[in-house]
Length: 335
Image: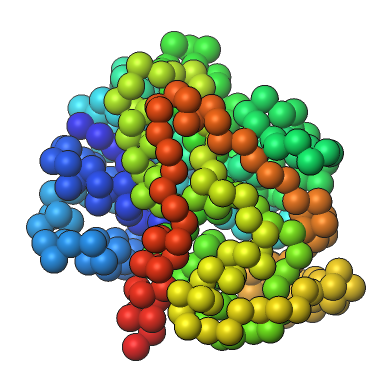
């Protein structure tokens, strides 16, 4: 049996869809019942038979910080996909980030060892890949430091250390480090915010850029890695390195909107950072612009994807197809 944590998120829900469509016996961990309807919504994007696929999943209510619920979830489990994480770039959330991302991952690793799990796949982020100071692309061996790293990346790096600890205790594991994951259904967070922004037809675009990859590529690669003999390795998952202007141009084009043409200046971003901080203090809204965010925009890193391509003999799918699909679903969901 396969266990998926974070099954109600972007990667987790798409992973569950693929696993159930391939007739795997699947168990998934969830925290609140209201999020299960979101999984059904994602399934419905791809299959008219989404209800039957959803019913194949053995759902266990629990939390990666709750050991008794994990003991139940880990019964008769052979493979574990650890997709659960808390995402925030607000420095004041660091303790919560560390508890969920590091301690929660430590619990998963410990349970894998205790239960004799065959293999663990841990979903990390390119935020734990070291930045380059030249135009050379960063790879899995580029040295990472905490300097100028956001709190989310710091805690995900700590989580990776827990997974490597498991490897030292003979746990077979792989780590994937995806870039910005393009996929439908989560329009208020992650890549979904690009589609929401593009739909408004703003004239401005942020400086900098990142590595981008489709959610279907991420899921397919994770499954291939888990079913291979590869272990004790980490892999960058990036299909293309694009500027934010370029990705917004692709999305606006697919939506029939005018592309943004004016770059945001760094002084404008700093004003936005101050306003963002006050909004957070006044009403608790999530921080979206911090000093680390602006540093990343000023110093974008490009990423080398050759390791995973060589390991699995694969090519990444074009981003345009996923962008068009996501745009179609976004427009449908707003109507």
